[in-house]
Length: 143
Image (cartoon, rainbow, N blue to C red; front, side):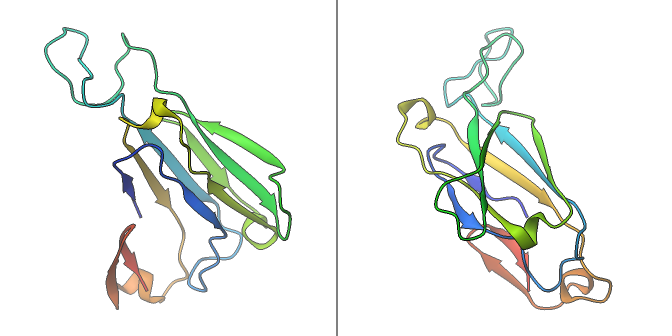
């Protein structure tokens, strides 16, 4: 799944990846990619791709909050910058929730963000066979 957020201030509410089709205990990989905004120029100054370049400052990271089930405050906040990968493994999906909080910071207003999530599904599940594909707001999701 790869949701694209045009407004970098958007978040993802607290949740667990607890779909029954997921392979229990398998790691989940979450890749973050951030843009510098619409006026980004490449190193030659010839117009931008919107992606960070080595010659420009990196966009500010977003905070990935981790909560124990039932807790009101996060036990950890992990800053995720452009190109970072976060691995959730073991029993994390059973014992914790996670999310990216919404931000009102102007630094994120002109920035877009995409997250690519890689998950392992049980053999024979609809997610593996391609049955019952439905469009959701976060991209294509297999039910």
